[in-house]
Image (cartoon, rainbow, N blue to C red; front, side, top):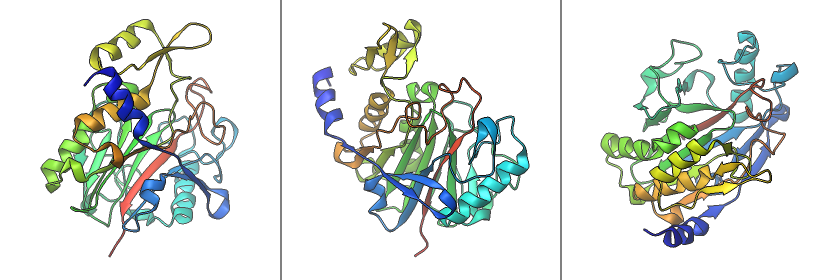
Length: 284
């Protein structure tokens, strides 16, 4: 595929999001492509509606921040109630900015908050409607996957290292190996994350992305001449490489750095809370 061919496909994918304010002021971003499907429930939390204060105000859903655990516990109770997620049915990733994707089921419910954490992993897949997949974010991408034929889902935390190493492709491979999914049936979406304008990187990182994705014109330059990388292109490229059809891909196009309804690790120089992406199959 040439750069021109990739750009034509990239610009053909759907873009958009819905923002819903739930009970108690809890905000959730959703993909219109996924929201139209009654068999699944999904979303990406805003930072509003919780009990945390100061730098972590207010719906901090990250256990890795220097925040009181009881506040994060209560934020998850608030969030689960507002989103109508069974509180004891969540399974959380244990991210390390890698590409490990684990298959989980109801025997894993509570891992990461009520029970011991999963082994290090940045992605989860399941076909069990008793499970709500949860991944944590503060600028990194969330990858959502759903196969309507095999009734299987996947959710990934895609930091720049994991995205560069194609964690999205690994999630599709796991869904195919675990549940017999055909990539042509899979729907894929990308949640809020740092946008191409704001993801400033060193020249070495920019060059490493160019080497890994030579057919994607992903390198740019910001107003002060520093290199930038378009991670949304990186996401779409690996989805296409996996066999997902362009008409089955949607980008929210929301920047965590620019949208103050969201936490941003970069904007706040690390002193901030975290959001959560969630995805589940609805009980029939």
